[in-house]
Image 1 (tube, rainbow, N blue to C red):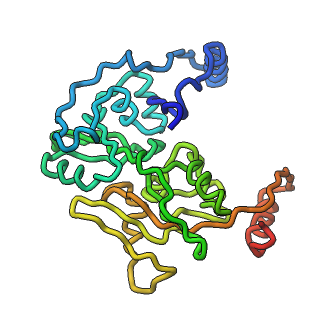
Image 2: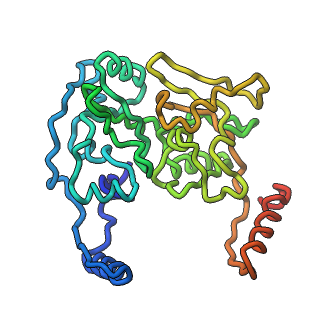
Length: 305
């Protein structure tokens, strides 16, 4: 996986600003806002005393569940501003009791959690900015487990004829593109969190990307989804289209992990562009720019590749 992710904000460890850079930035912002600068250093793992886990892993899942301090810190918060403020205040009172890192035994984890009255929170890469990954479950549960899907990180199958692929949910955006590149294909979905988010996270949050003027939300690309729920596995049929009433995929896309754990999906793909170029254009006003974007988006695909 390379460098470890920060547990208190965006990006990887060892990619912070230097102290002089931080001092300059904080004072610049404070001057513009006419407030006193508060130059709090980033938190360190050694600064934070976590509470003891309230639940213990069963022997059958001991290799999947961990109470490693870094993992518990990483899985406490997403990346919203209020969560970052709490992380810098060294407030990790809602840290999960355990972190699950399954490869194949998601159903076994949910079976144990249901019987032990333990809450399970799906975790892709933690880029949520709406409080979706914080394991603050209240006193109704014996404990909380953050279920990290990072080990489900492969492109399992590629259908060149239909331009589709079966992809595990824990794979990050850059790894998807790297796996598809030798086949001349791309998923062509680039949210702002592309480097630090996963396919399962995109589906669960009904992700939209920066290129939303043409290829829009992730649900435009979903052919079928496999989800593990406390009641068993649910997998929709892979069809080019269906007129048979409500789509079961629509219950899962945008469900925020409330109904189950997305483990894999068949995704529609795009051909990789043969040429790429960058240019900057100026327009007299916003509406002229919007007309230009519409004209480009509505051109036949052969003119865009």
